[in-house]
Image 1: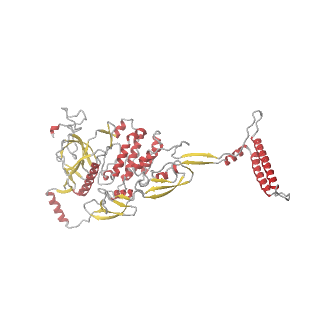
Image 2: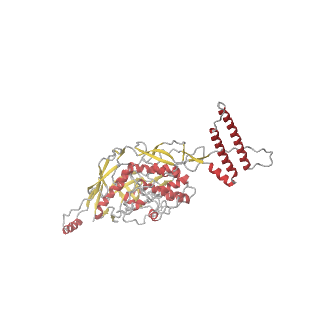
Image 3: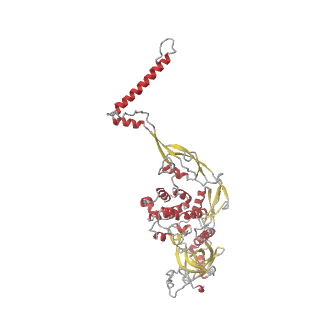
Length: 607
């Protein structure tokens, strides 16, 4: 491969005589880490290895060159340094005898993860896997090279933060891509400014995928957790992780991008949650956006926004307005005071001395008394006109008179009140009521709508039904139509989707029990757990299910999926301690053990 004469730092043609590349600054004489491949190594008779770009507890990334297509690539090597090592004189990885099972299991997960990514190469905002192969007792994945900078570097070039308007333009591709990744059964767990790349043309890519244990504390691997962005459940291997874990990461990223401040680490928040709302750090952040981000950063995974779809729905939800009145909330309020029945007459302009309010009330009383007595006399004569005895029936007259006197007394009392007393009395008699204008809440998450202060004036009556076209938890029908008026305490019946009647069984490959059960719970599949002794799958991981993944299960009928969880078989004592000692000694003198993990990947185990 020497005929290519490339710089191992940038894989551009070497156009200099010195040891330092003028393009990327790579020094050919600089030492390299002995645990990783030496620059100039050739893999699979095709790929030229350049400098080590990065590494974590799961793998290492190298700059590479495809000698067939003659293009730059990035090569990821499975290299869990806590379980294996490499001699500087050899490219072959040596697996520690006591970690063979873990090494095999994690490599299987590594292979499956990158196989899934290779199937998603049509997604524009993920760097595709173009090749996979086994070599040097480990596995490799080849990625297309993307020339860009990290989001962290991009922020440094843009005053350290972005406005909401800039975020609205930049982030939608990431939201969409992450949602599609989740639909494929993957959870990223490492969203941060370092795992998002931006090209010179503004193209944005989501990178940094890793197996679950690499992004979880207290596992056999050295974890890679991004402080401030990792969710609380990632700090405890017994907690369930899922799409809500990435919701925490993306909300933490939005927090950092728009405030310039990295959120407090999750473990510190658990001890003392003093995280400040984004809008308080940057008043230009819309209040709704600020509240949604805080909901996405909820320490309780069950109370947190669960999916990227829900996050996007909420964060881009705008208040709906009508021509009646603009309101800052998502429901409109109209105050309608009752009209007073008091009548006043205009005062002639020629009068030099204005009539007092007390005098005005006296005039009103007199007018009412006069009109009342006039109609009373008319009624009296009308009733007596047909009476042949000449005797009037005064019972009706008595009741009418009593009513007039009663109202007269009330008005008299009012005229005798002081000004403050009269004002208070009039205020109490003039009531107001609040009328709300209903929004369209179909397609919204019912639990979030029910908890929202914007809809606290409603009493919800939910009806749960299966729906093949509406996502689980979303409202698809409401009894109070959009733009219809309602009063405080009105009852609204909403139909909430329980998801489709027939649900596709998700794949379980490389998933632990907790991760797979989280997926089943998410789609509403009932399941039962059974243990099965096997050495083929790591203990605590799914070995098989009673119905093939990809097939449908009838959740409406209550069909139950049986999930078989791998359990380590008991060790059998077939040798005495002395025999074991002799066997171990003889094994050291024999050839290395060859273990087939994948059809194209062979693992050699050394003591």
